[in-house]
Length: 567
Image (cartoon, rainbow, N blue to C red; front, side, top):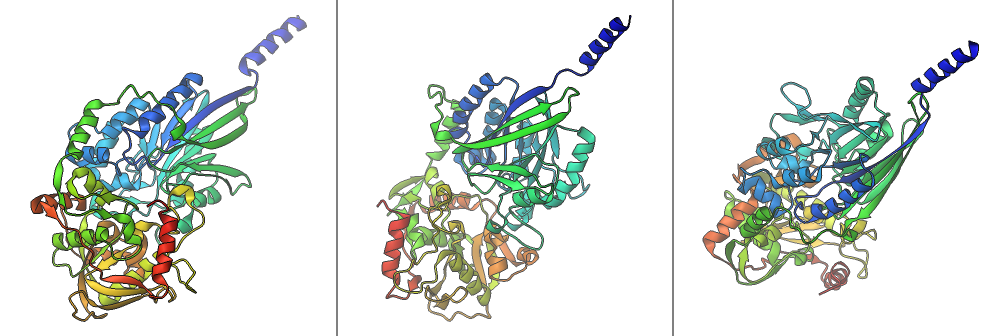
């Protein structure tokens, strides 16, 4: 009898407590696709499907945001065809994404665009720190639970809170953006208590290095490392926003480390993370191993015989081939780094013509090395001429603020030369995967000015390089006088900090300085203006140059050969 009872008890014990098990799953992560859904994502889809066949019910596909800007396909479905299902949603749905977070460039497109996209996505778009101003509740789903391969995971979405520094409030009306560290501290205990997951994963649209982005009393643009170092409870952080191919194990408050991994942009790279979970006989997680790597997608072989969404491709191509107007000569963006150039001066000319009485114009190179050839131009050329969907602002600035703005711009742009053999441009030996192409700072913050004549003395220290000689018409320039200045809305709302840190204007005061704004994005108005003019004759204003003359020409030639080794 005792033997029989012991056997029964042993059977019950085995039924209630199965043997320990090892579970394996894989996360594939993209971010900052920037509208490249008809070229990059189909290639990535081929790889995802191959992994899914190899690992059924063990693959999670995530995205870190910034999908609705940066490519004509996205622009076309944002603003031209607004009734069809958005092509970004179509492609991501077809690929079977499990979850995405929202990015600042998605929000930049405005409520009508990003709200529509979220509705059309057949997967959650999450963001715990995107908060409804009226209710104080999250505007988006804060986190989701995914069960895959026997593992219960919580995925928490967060976005950089620095959006008010770049995007006009009308685009995100009714929202505010909490600090990421504070939001993580609030939501992780809630997730732990409510869900008791095996893993908590951060899906963030924010960069990893705070010093590489905006830092103010209210905002820190890149907070991934701060969250990892200051908040307990996360097991993995998948991120995007800074366009870096980066993998790092960051120390946590518990004395452990957490993998933080992000790809670059436009689908050129994806992140793969392999997770192994060990459970004991009672089903408790007793061990986990998380390892990741970065995969260059150029090595992926896709099925080139099938074109995804041929109707959408045809519609976008037809739009891009619409004629705009004739350019009487070619313009080359690379010339903008070395002095007054026809490419940037064309932007200045257009901003003057489109603005409300502007006396000065600020503009920067946005695409690094675009070229528009002479002859008939098309809508596609206008995306090379002006990359982003910024509005055009006319703002009130004092002469001193104009000078201080330019001082910061050229401090980001130009080296302080100690002798004739030094670099004239501020270069960095670390090319960051090609992203900065040899420049230490981002070229879209290298604003030059038109409407004034000035010199940039690279032998002078930071803050003392710019000397404004006069207005371009020869009338005096006055540091105390107020001027109307044309610039894009990214700059006008504090982007790059040239107005705030450089000119010293408080962030909250910037909206009060706006005198006028275009109704559509600047590229739209450029297209319409050139269509009306029919012909454009690019020219160089020659209103500024680098000095001293004994050093600058030779130094510019040397740095040109470094940045652009091929003619």
